[in-house]
Length: 454
Image (cartoon, rainbow, N blue to C red):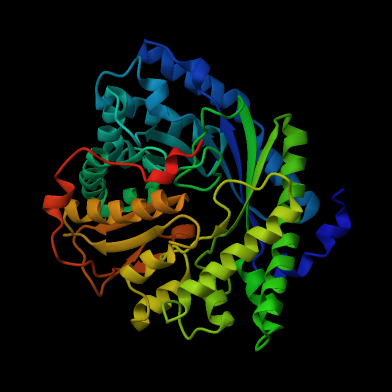
């Protein structure tokens, strides 16, 4: 049983080391909202979310106050909207009306983000999938905090290169439509390989069709806690290092388990998973890159970085799974650039490049995340970056993703300010050589042979 003594044990973690519950995410199925009439569909979506989520924010605040645990975000994820809108939406603009409905009800119930403006097209696109994808730039430009994701590949199905090529154009168009705000629309858009159904983290959260009608998923984060714990074992061998990370991850996950159980009980909604992800923030002392430096690197990106990150990711998971029977989502270490001051410092020092970040994604959670690139980067080049990252996920049977931001009007050496949890970032150089002929071939990259294990 989890008791208050376990929470008291973490007081220093919360007060001094930036431990927080990053999010309580309420997943809501919209399958029972499907309607061939667009107005009725929007009305049903609004009513379902308003009814199910009406107490989410107040419950999160009550738990924060009672247990003294910061809960940074309260979020909602919904069934991929391409599935929900297919019967009613005949144009991209029809889908945009749904995005506006989602943003309206999000604001009214008071949550920070709403995810699920999504399509799952790893093997092919339906007409509804394509319409939703083509609506994404306008939807993100005309809403405030709706997030969009598209799953373009999987280990079982391969990579849908038609959709990859299309998403290169969509990302560029999203950047153009939000260029007056440093192309921030792209910060709300992520593409995946092997996207999980229960991810509580934005921008990639959606409520999978395998999930219950409503579910509570909690994301915990504590890079500062791990960094502080490792300071006490400087110079010790890898066995001591690994044990320290595992023990710390266990304690952090127990905090998340408590919050998840309390939220589930108070809302009367089943508990889904704990996602133990070392998700950094721009705050000093809340950095995954700083953990890598504490392990023994001068900067993230130095030789040994991939090995250190692999160790960190594995030990976090080993500690987490001992603390909760339902660890899921993405769980591991995130390496976003703009949201991690240590990563930003490494880029500015010349230690960390886009190519090194790609190598690091082979061993950690997610992938190329919150990376600002020159605004004149070609759509085909973005598609090539996406294809490379998705191939890592497909072959290694893991989730990988790309969230890059081509900042219109800015180039290498300039900086961009997103604000809040999204932070700020130096614009990173992109390989200038062309992959046009490759991404323009069309069709699908086949699944690897090990996908046929049943």
